[in-house]
Length: 66
Image 1 (cartoon, rainbow, N blue to C red):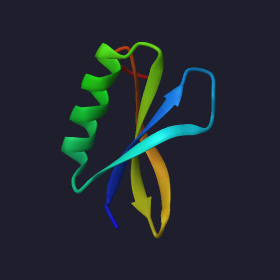
Image 2 (cartoon, rainbow, N blue to C red):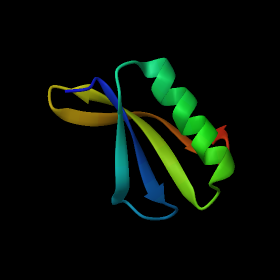
Image 3 (cartoon, one colour):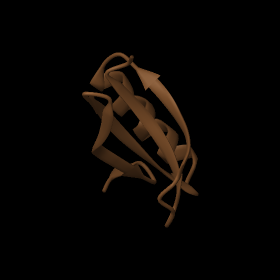
Image 4 (cartoon, helix red, strand yellow):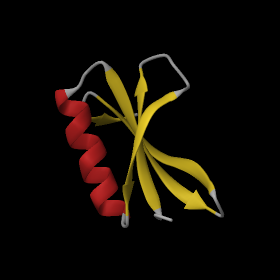
């Protein structure tokens, strides 16, 4: 299981549209920030695996951390 993943959410919604797995935090953060710059209709959350549950550590919207 991957240590991190990035989840894509429609703005104002709580259900993830999809997830992408990453092995390290830096790659996940870089991907989330870049995707949020080009896709202003969604927010991207970097999540860390915590014993099978993923906890959000950063969220990006329009290229900015929120």
